[in-house]
Image 1 (cartoon, rainbow, N blue to C red):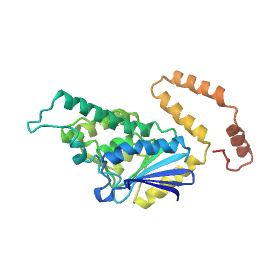
Image 2: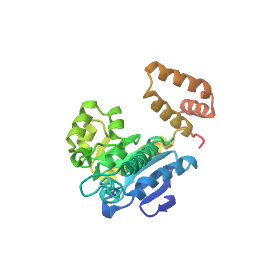
Image 3: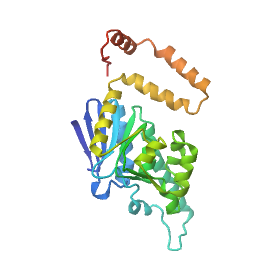
Image 4: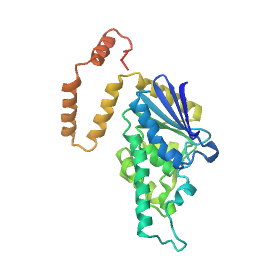
Length: 276
């Protein structure tokens, strides 16, 4: 690996073969999401995008888990509840601002120009499941543990899973998991298509994630980014509106060196070599 950067030791960034690996690094706490991880992750993703350090991102966790979810002890202080569970209007305004900041952090993952692949193993519950829902692709071990568990804490999930998960999981499955708050494993996650594939252990998971990321990174960065943008924009459009968007993009950018190289490589029966 090259270009290794430590961020207060809780986030590690590594670059290899045009792929950026971002590791959650609190293994002794099962990578619980404290303020340092939650609010610094967007800047790491932005840095990779702005500086064009890679063509794909892999998000994973050190140790035996992806993440045990939100660090409750860290964020309870932001709720400012009194002994009788009351709070002042000012307390509620501060909490509103905190929730918005937390939401924005996961939206930054979704808005990454380059694709983000999540590798889920061990605990991936609560806030971690919310984080995973903002990624483009999710792979997992069979025994990974997920949950939309806020209902069991007396909360409504408010950092994205209820909005994002129904885009790729049936509404009925999301309803069942959100209403009960129960955990589900990687096998069930694959069944409902929350994850694309499952693997027996973390080594196999990392190997599969690396191969997938490098395959994506080998394509034209401009075309992959434009494809992601077209998919995202089409989510809130009719089929015809989505086609119109794709048509405008193609007529504006179709003639390019990427197209020339792609077609030439196809005719010559070789792998294309796109510019960075």
